[in-house]
Image (cartoon, rainbow, N blue to C red):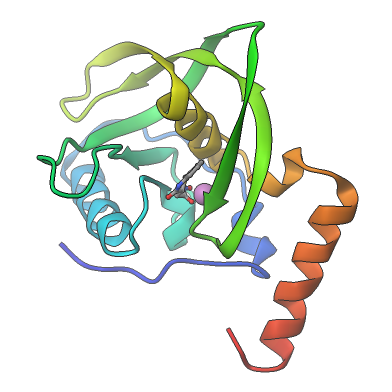
Length: 172
Ligand code: GNR
Ligand code: NI
């Protein structure tokens, strides 16, 4: 397993890419998932999409277990939301690609997601709470969408500007 650098703003060229489906869950996909997992744990974060390490493939890792609990990683290939609840909920989100910025985001409270698991088997998962939020956040990444796209334009532009400026000043 290899730790990989996480792409952050202002690199929208990468983060806005639409990732391509994997055609099969093969050893190279499992290897990439393992690198993503190590990178996510180290950050630390609870989810990571492949594009966040610069790889435009529809791959996600997730682990919502708390510090000290036994780790329960999840590996998803080509995840798709096949149902979402009418009921919405608010959650304060953050993103490893937008360090140190947190904002409330409103999304469907529950989703059903279809994906290929680590063995390449088609699977469905229904999720609520933080798991539902995180799945939607990661699937957004696969489509080049960031959580700041779900907040006000004023706030979004303020954040984008802050990262552009920080880079110019050599602070990123
Ligand atoms: O680590 C993460 N925490 C988090 C908190 C609330 C909502 C979404 C997330 S995902 C984020 C890791 C990340 O950037 N995944 O893409
Ligand atoms: Ni993110």
